[in-house]
Image (cartoon, rainbow, N blue to C red):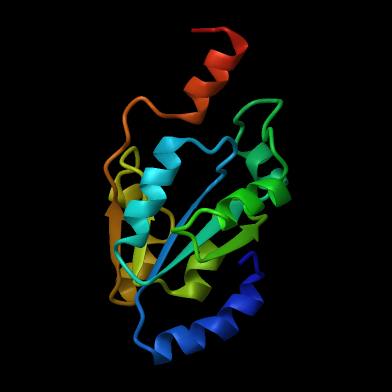
Length: 156
């Protein structure tokens, strides 16, 4: 379900009452590939509910991923994520980082890909202070949006 942070905060009260474990991750998810799906499946396996913070179009542009990025607009990217079996909720955010989302959601697990060091994961301080865990999952080799773009453009 694609929802706002405000809507999710109301839902999260019920999630907490049921003692369900909340997992949070975030990203651009511009061109979804097998690596993304494996990563999201692994993230979901850590808990009961997987929330994905999705960078808005303006947020992606600020990340300097390239002049043509994102290829897919935020609504299309949110739709695709929402239709991946492991994903329970998608929240689009416009800030430079998902820090505000993490602070409000207070996940039990904060998850990023293996290319992130734990100390560099935005919001790790908040999650640890609330008794949660920060996990850097194994990076899925040979799958990346950048390599897909290079392949499509004939650079490889």
